[in-house]
Image (cartoon, rainbow, N blue to C red; front, side, top):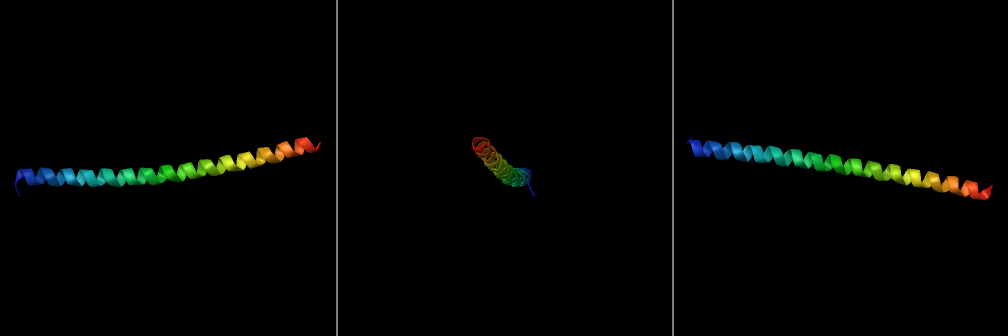
Length: 57
């Protein structure tokens, strides 16, 4: 195998690794975003219930 071919194969391998890591990061970030949205929704519901309780007093 000539040196140029070896360089190209290493570059393509590195690119594949980077793409894989980027995909994993994207999935992890999306999961964290859904978790944050869920927590925010719970907090908003809790605050709404607290507000309604305070208004009823």
